[in-house]
Length: 111
Image 1 (tube, rainbow, N blue to C red):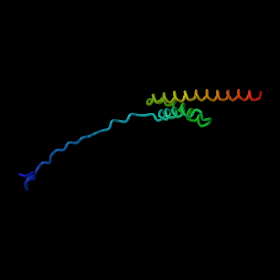
Image 2: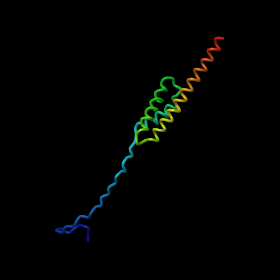
Image 3: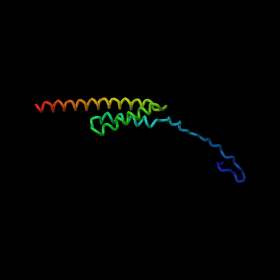
Image 4: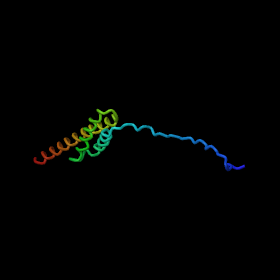
């Protein structure tokens, strides 16, 4: 007795089971919110650079405010706006303090 069919005898094929694996649908994202968050975080590190430091601060703030009006990615947009706002406040305070210190030093040097 073997598993081989006898000549002239037809054997029905064994049914196979098909498994369909579907990936869950990707959650919609907001590219502006992601860009705002990244620029906001980068601007926290670049606030002290005179001219280059303004680019990520302003861009991150604008992109974050635009992204807040979209349906998805609100948390990242808020993070971008907050980080950019903090970096903007630090940047303005830093440069005003530096100009003030340099002004006081210059006025005492002329005496």
